[in-house]
Image (cartoon, rainbow over the protein chains, first blue to last red):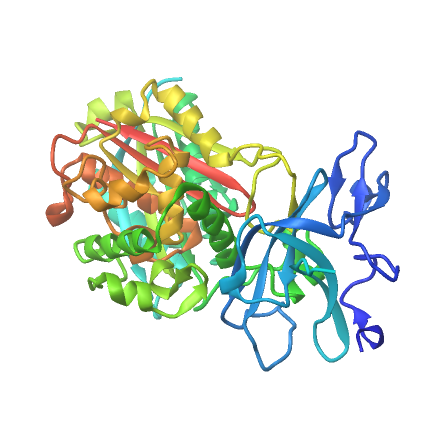
Length: 131
Length: 381
């Protein structure tokens, strides 16, 4: 089903079977996410960010945000947080496949593409699942 | 730099005033400040001020009088008031003039702030996916802080409880009804761990201050409060700030820590010398974290401080004596100057039933806001 959805924005994650978030890296090694628009993004090389990280912090959005929020009219509270991708960067992301009560700072998380609404997909992290 | 004093302070009650625009609330405060200083508008030789959502401050001359006064508009987010104060202070300290006014006002619609991603240099998807909310930032920063430093949710409730209690005693406050701890803790969740009554609400209000040189203070025989220091700092690399789709792995510090250190250094005193403090309390956790960031306690000590009532009006360091943003609401352009207004009132001993106990000699104020900037002002008598 996810394959029928178009990404919420182009260039956020890679096309691979196991997609990665895309970041920009400057000559001195500094990593940026998202890749900056305009002049500040021009001299960066595009890199794939890690698919696995650890939970840095989290919360739940319990009310429907005002625009520019563009999610489904029928609002369901959603989880979000920051995921530390070791040695790279800490990224803000929706969190799926779990509940507020199960989240703990420091727990292992993995990257996943998830539906945003009927027509678009978004990136998210979920607790790392055993193989 | 020569020393600068505050000799007049005026405030338009915070909250909701349907019949008055934000700028009119600024004019109201300006007239009150002039009266307090026993001056007329044409005595003002320099003015600076602004709002975030209620228009340009210099249009106030239409109401106050066309005296040809130079009027600098400030548009500096949450530091708008602090920047107006700093600009007016510098105009006097440099010898450009002897009497100046700093003014801040605002008027926001109900509900959480909704920011435009482009104005903050961010892509549209960040707003579309519902991650560009100030309330989330405070919850995310706090969630981590609470786990790392052992702060309980009950302590968050205690902060708000104190805010409403102090707000009851402040004529200019918006929320003036005390609320018990359980009602605060059990109010609807906004962003876990923060519930509704732990947050301030966007609101309206206006504040004006009249500043003067030492020569003028003597000439007028004014009831003056000295400005020991004003410091504004934007974010350093690697700090965690509002509206951040990502951040560096290394913790690089915080704008509040930088502004606080600079202000203490300029004033030549330390946190232990402060008698009363107004700290940015966008929500109750912000007050907790800002207690440590401004150097008043170590991380984690707040839990005990709140239990012991150390930040109450009769405590060792009263904090947010007029109920802060939680009781007064948040008109962004006015908040920084409201804190200074409250400190001036405390230092002059005019705070009535909320006057802090003891001999108040020094007062500290701190604002924080998007996209990562802090302003600190230290006053003394």
